[in-house]
Image 1: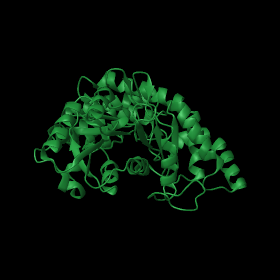
Image 2 (image 1 turned 90 degrees about the horizontal axis):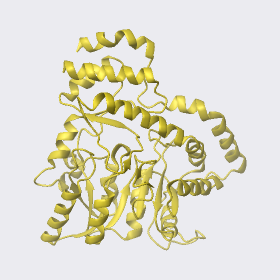
Image 3 (image 1 turned 90 degrees about the vertical axis):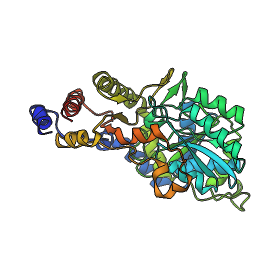
Image 4 (image 1 turned 60 degrees about the horizontal axis):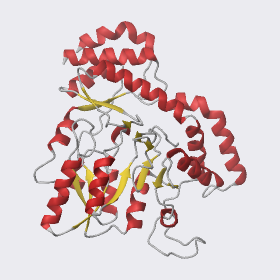
Length: 389
C-alpha cells in the first residue's frame, strides 16, 4: 500500500488538507448572516417557540411541496412523533431496512412496536420491495402480530423505491413513514423528498446536507391535519393553549437558535446541492468501473448527503486512503439485526445483501467545498488503492 502514498505524494501538497465534511468553509460563507439572526433572537428572547420556528416551517414546506412541515428536536423525534400520532404501539409490526442508522429501529421500539428488518437492493442500497412483501407475508402467516407500518430509508440521500413501496403499503394497509434523515433535496418523479410519502422525517444533525449547529429535525406531511397532532406531541401532548395534556407526548421542540442557523443554510442549499451533485457525477464517472457505486432509481435524484461505494478488501483500501490523506467513513459496518440491542429481532435466515454490503462499503468526502483538484486527487487515490489491494 506504500505505492498508493507514493503515487499521490506529488499532488498531495497541491490540494491541501481534505475535509470529509467541511462545516468551517460553509460557516465562513454565511457567518455574518447567522450572527445577525442570532442577535435578533437574543433581542426578542423567545429561545423556545420563537418566530423563526414558524418561518422555518413555512420555508421547508414551500421548498418540498409538503402540505405542512413541523420542526422538532431531532431526527429521532421526527420518527417517533408520527408513529405515536398514528397509534403505533405494542402488537404492531413496523418494517424497516437493517442497513441504516440505529435511530430508525430505536424509534420503533420506543413506541412499543416490533421492528421487522428487511433486506436491501444491491444496486440502490435501499429497501428491497420484494423482500418487504415476503416479510409482510411471513408476519401475517404467523398471525401473532399485526403488520401496521413501513419505514423506507433514503440512504445517503437517494430516495427509496416509493412507487413500489407505496403500492405495497396501500395494498397491505400499512402506514408509510419515510426516513429522509439523509435525503433532504432528493427527488423522485419530479417530487421532492418530504412530498413522497404520507409522512416524512428528516434530521438536521450538523453533518447532514442541511444541518443545524446542534440536534434538530422536521416532519413533513401530505395532510395538513397532521400538524395539530404533531405539534401537540412535541410539546408534551398538550392542547393548543398548553394547559393540559390531551395525548401522550414528550419534549421534542426545536430551539429557536437552531431555526436561525437552518434558515441561513436553506438560503444557500440549492447552490450547495448542485455542487455536491457535480462532485458525485465526477466520482461516478471515475470509479463506477472499479467499484460498486450507489445506482440511482429511475426518475430519482439524490440529495447527495454522502457518497458511499463498495469494494472488496475494503479495510485495506480505506487504510491506504487514510495514509494518502483522504478521509473516509464507514456507514454502516454492523447492520441493525446484528447489533446487541436488536438481536431479538434478527431474522433467522439473515439478510444476505445487507450483510455483504456492510462488509464492503465505505464513504468518500462529500461537501460543496471540495475543489476540482481535490476530487481528482481523491479519485486517483481510490483507483490506486483498489489496484494495490
